[in-house]
Image 1 (cartoon, rainbow, N blue to C red):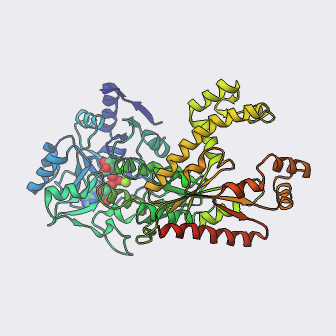
Image 2 (cartoon, helix red, strand yellow):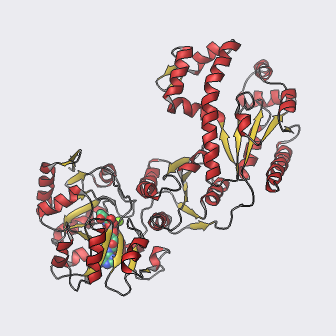
Image 3 (cartoon, rainbow, N blue to C red):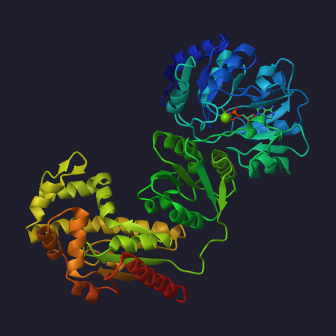
Length: 553
Ligand code: TXA
Ligand code: MG
């Protein structure tokens, strides 16, 4: 049985939990420990048998050495020899913190801990619970990341429980990790010092203190067959969810466009917050906003891990540039992808300026075909009907206004569509009232989504709404396109698509705007009078023209 100890109450440490965990460590047991980077799987680093159990619990190859965790730089001399002056400088600047130093080891550190190497990785983690635990046990704690070997690292106690339940004695729950990617590893046994793994401490920071730092090749590429990396762990496939991952590098706009153009049904997406609305049909994991690499680092493992609870067939991921924490985030994503990377640098269409195309038309006119054409052109589509339904769930103010106007029309968070429909369907005044409330919220949300897409450097967006002009959404658009089709065609399509009678199809069409309305009010009219293929071609020609006009402005 694995005990989970909730040992933080506010800022106060739970001394009892720490004393218990220290006892487990002293008697050769395994304790999952919180650190600022990721959770570790800890044991007495001086006890070969205890360390052996770590490898068993993780299913980790035993030639892959562990990091020794110490509570202060004063412990360096206990386990390391020939310590260069630079080690003290680094410790002074960055410990406790996300930095591991590789130094020559002393004899008392067993082979099991160092994987047989004559060096040892040592670090002082920045987490009060683990620091207190090491002090209480009065032993250095050897700890790899607490995930099952090959899986994404654990950034919350729940992840550890998922992987380690029943295999270890205790998990100390210190809350979610504040850094989210593992420590930066620097080898100080060579000159110049060498970066073996990018991590929570940016390379730029290391360089500030050390001057030149050589970056090991494994940081950016896959190890070749038979190659022997300096950090043995870097040769293994890592962090991988079950579904294969493709990482897309390049500017955020270019990678988002690549994703839009290549995504298929059943795919999962890892993207910046700003781009999430572009993939309404995919399983999306946001990793934080474009500018916020700290957030991206905290989210990346959780994002990768969460796909294992879904049925996605492939995962496509946007990847940050390598400045600051980006080097570590990109490295984890690329390793999860087995270095399957597509680079779209240079694919930007930066000569164009951003364009918002409004799209509207009655049921059965073929709007879906036009939307697919736009998607294939790399223009994101905002489905306003979907925006409305998401707002109903996410926005309490909207729900309150609707209840004040129409009474009890919610079942929990869900709208009772039939109940509301019964009120507004035959009553124009009530319908107007409903629209006044909902349009205000939808317009505000669509406006935000357009701005997000623009800021993210998208080529353009299409706003798809049946009441595009009536709702005020048209005013957010540079051009509006109305789609019409012959009445007989629409009836036939509706009957076939929605399995309804001719009479019902006619009544639906008659409740909507006549063709004349679109002719008079939209910038462009698309008439869908022939085959689907011909209509797709006709739509593409118009949309290209709209985008081109834009280029010459
Ligand atoms: O942030 C971290 O470093 C986390 C937390 C728990 O402290 N730990 C962690 O450990 O990421 P692990 O075992 O998952 O990764 C340690 C890496 C491996 O790639 C290993 O090969 C390398 O450090 N390493 C350890 N000792 C080494 C040594 N003496 N020489 C070269 N590489 C070493
Ligand atoms: Mg690991």
